[in-house]
Length: 492
Image (cartoon, rainbow, N blue to C red; front, top):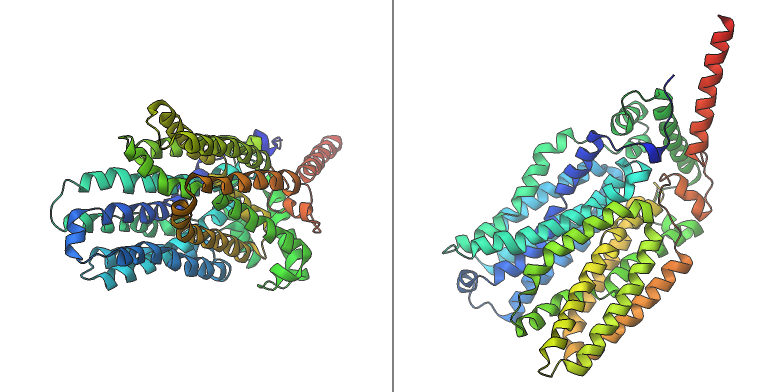
């Protein structure tokens, strides 16, 4: 008789890793598209080709990408449910490929902006769908690591585009200097399109569509291990199927369910808050303005920073399933508060002085702030949102939360230059307040979700859960198997 192993004792099999990593290739699009634009517009041949490249045109080229992503996120909120997670990723890849071709072939600014809007739409689809897909294929004990691959690949994409490829193209001549950069966006889209046929559908989406046999086959391949009792796979399948059937019998899936049902309102509020606190941490404001400070001291900030941020995010992924989401978030919030206080205090006392030692400390604390953020918030807001949502509202609820993040970022993009011009370093006091409020909110109100299956998390929000504890079911299944063996032996 094969023993039934507890989830914490299991390893993630190679097929699950392959699926999670391949889906995350689509996440490269977000990083590449975000990082490529700053490199492109800095190329001398680009400015000459599109002359006059005024500040207003420059702003339009950069900001229209975010506008496109908002519409892409809302589209994915529908398509991920209706067409499935897998097909939504494929649609995003097709649109991203078209957008890359349009941008690389641009002959005037209007064509370039159109390509940026379309590219933003594709990235919005990927940004919403990939964390959901990975959270639904991952075993509960490693869901944080696999779902967090999205943020890891976004960071890698940004580093590749903004640093390595951009640096290489700076040595080119003519329009190749910027056209190749824009065409580079097509590479991950092509990879996704080639391999999407081998990517399985989400087993939970298959069960929602009552394609039970296909779902069982996918679960067996994703979570099965050599020598493992088949009953263990059936137990996981049973929990998913029964809970989804119960939810479908009780609730009508739709946008209104997000607001009319108290448990769903709580889920949505927490999802929006974790996305809001991500932006209210001040990370993007730090990112936008640290380069000027570094240049003033003869340093190139981003060239040193990006690899460290990516490494810090990887450390977070390896520990988030051990530490948990809640503890990581509130501790990160407190440490960011302390760090931001030091940045503000030192800036207020020494930023206009000739004290290079203190300025070095300011740079060090700004550097540390981005590392601290990557150790905590950077991945977890992508992990936490899909896992606190029930299957009936996961896509729609995630889309609202992600759009909240985008809109807050847009506000800061508009307000921050004015704020720095008016109050200077005192602007950092806003983020000192928001970080401490965020830490307190997470500590007192956010539930922990580590180690629980997506179906079990419903209990946290007061939902009726048909199969509430997978461990209990496993133990019962094992006891039943033992009893059957004993009876067989007695008959002999």
